[in-house]
Length: 115
Length: 111
Image (tube, each protein chain N blue to C red):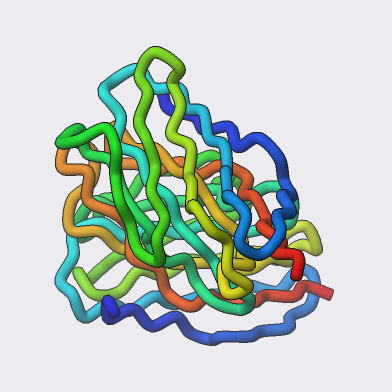
C-alpha cells in the first residue's frame, strides 16, 4: 500500500472555527489531491497540487485553502468551518497524471463533523 | 474537460449472478479511465485502469471492463457475484492533471 497518512482520522469542531487537515506521504509523489465524499455526490475535488508550492482549485474549492511547503505534506484548511463542510475528506497521491494514466492512491480519510 | 456518469446509484444482484455496473464518460482528450472500489470505512482501492493498450481490461477480484469509444462507455463486469463484492464502486476519468469521479454505485449482493 502507498504510504499515505491522514491526520486526524476523526474531528468534531464548532461552526466558525478554523480546521487544518494533514496529508503526509512517504512515496515522494509529485501530485497530491484533496477530495470530499458526501452521499449522493461521490468524490469531489477540492484542491490539488502538482509540486511544492504549486496548487490549483478543484470543483468545490470555496471555503478551503491548501498549502504544500514540502513534497511530503499537503495541508487542507477550512478557514471558518460551516456545517456544510461536514464530510469525509480523502487525500490521494499520484506519481504522474494526465498523459501517463497513473492512478491515484488514497489515504484512509478524515471524518469531519462541524456542529 | 472531463466528466463521468454512473448509471444507477444502487444495484442489487444475486450471489452467483452477473455483475454489470455502467459508466459513461465525456472527455475532450483521449481519456484514461479507472474503476475504484470502496469497502465500508475504508479509502478507495484501484480495481482496474484503461490506458489505451487494450480495450478489454482485467482487474483484481475477477472484475473486468471494456472501453468502447463509439459508445463513450467503460462498463464494469464480473461473471459471478460473491458476497464479498458488496461495496461502492466509482468510475473515474483523467486527461489532464485532475481525476474526476462519478457519483458511485453501491452494489448489493443478495443471498
